[in-house]
Length: 142
Length: 320
Image (cartoon, rainbow over the protein chains, first blue to last red):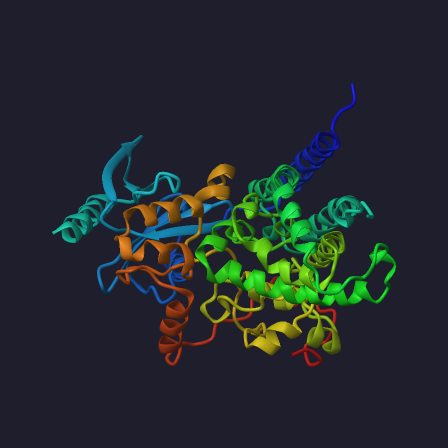
């Protein structure tokens, strides 16, 4: 049986793709930058939305995520995505819940985009942030 | 008619070059690659090849039909007219400039082209991050004038293949600047980093494929500045490595917008620029740039952190 050229080409390409991605993993390329201080969150927030200037910040205890609020009351959630960061300014669809696990309290943020995923921010100020986020949706709905 | 696809022959070169850049990254800039991002980008390349094989027939049929209406006839042995090849290559690159510009300025076209930009990294694997859905846009129409001029669709496809191969090597942070004369005429890593950047000053700039002269001619050229870190990706970063979401997210977003929009605005969500909204609730690249320009008067320029700073080919004094 003769295989179609496109199928052969695709199979060889797939093998090369897996080999290269495996090599990137084996070489330990990437890394894991942390949102572990106000300056790191400021940079990530400004990268997410030009000019976003936080006046209040909450860093996740493991540095994987953060929340930032600007003077206009906009709240941004930021998460580590690979070795970069991705964020969203929260709108009316956003919801926040308190989350507790093994002595750590945090806020669980759903920005309303299923594919962006739920973001967990371990912070002692979880209640304050959850209230503020849930007020965004109430305020916008009103 | 010659049956020759230059990109097929270039694939081993692509693989070796990505391998070499990964080794460079290991030594000089480990954060230039991220394994999951690499996997997604390369999968885009594979899917694009398959989609092209399955869906390219319509474009070819359209071009062959248009060829029947050509105004100049290079004869049955059109491939032997040597001067037609460089002419076709240059005109095809001009065509590329405009189809690429449309890919950024018309949301229907952007829905397909966004795939090439949705990585937050800029490396050789990003070059292979090609769209699966180009066949569902009207990009092929930009080639029709070339066909009507008399260039055979196969000649245009071969020139387009070499154009694509040229563009592979410019997707890197490993090269800072090329010699001045080269930067003046050709598209380079520096010029194309600008194109992939989301810094407000860089949005919707440097659409060139091979020759940067088109951007200089049509007012879309922007030089790379050395004192500002370059951020890559799209204005609203995906935040997901899901391949299918990465492929179709803008199509779904556009169709949802069209569905929800008032009747008089539906067509605008198809044909106007990305970021446009009928209620002004979103920002286009012009709006983002205008806000940035009104703000930077008070801002302090950040320190240079470009990976390419470590890899000068030409002295920075030589370059633009």
